[in-house]
Length: 185
Image (cartoon, rainbow, N blue to C red; front, side, top):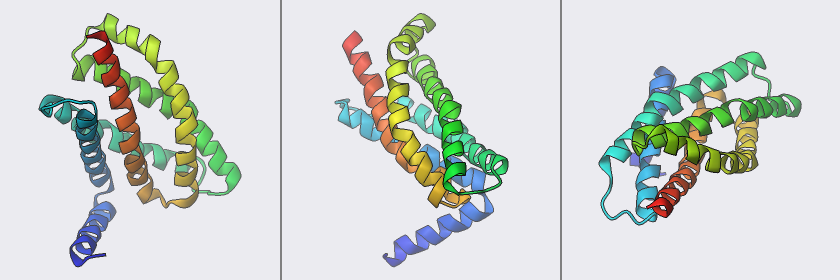
């Protein structure tokens, strides 16, 4: 690792240790923004939509980072920090039955109502049509991530790992949302 990267990583680790919530929120926001920028380019948008980008960063900072921070603390509290296979399976199951559907629904609502400024009937229609398949895809993808996260990573790195994987998931959701928008136009 180069000295600049190593110094940057060390500074990041200090921030994570001293200001975990703030650091996780900023990390989630930055990764949400990068994910949206990449998704915009991949979907053929010629000029970066700054309003959309800022709203996605805001979603990461204000919701994704803090929610993940407190969710992982709560799960470790409920299961007393255990990492055996049986406990990890319970954590993953609980996460998939609660936060996964909630997060995906909230994304649909936020993206439709706030980012795209669509009226409620259009957003509701999109949720009825698209949400079930997105959630099913989520249940095929995220349990593996949850297993790795709860089994192998210390608590302070779980939101960061989740945010890195969510970068890819965000590309999927953004491209899916964008493709549905293009089909309707």
